[in-house]
Length: 117
Image 1: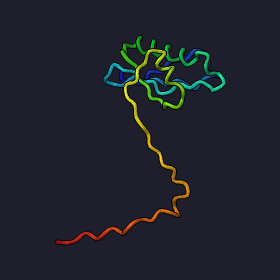
Image 2: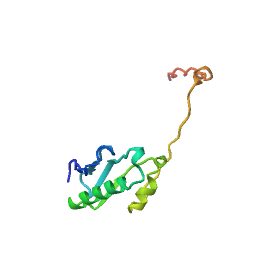
Image 3: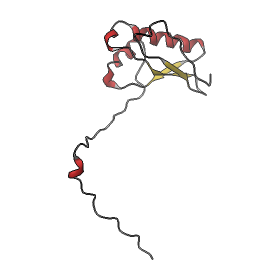
Image 4: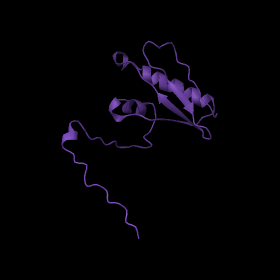
């Protein structure tokens, strides 16, 4: 442990983006950075196969758990639950559209100079 662990993929490369899996130094936890299956090849079990392959590779090296970060709008949340993963942390991202706002925002009052006592 303590360095990158590259998980070698089965020969599916035309269908998937690379899988990057790392172990977290000083822990018994692996981290899965990315798994992406082309949209026209989804629903065939390819991502599930890649996840299980990665879990086995981590386990063989002595790692005891695997984490990954995902956006909830990718549709992958159900897949991660089906392969036995659990939600450990969830977050909310806020967004404000700033298009065209230049004309309507005043910079506010000028800062006051610091008083000297």
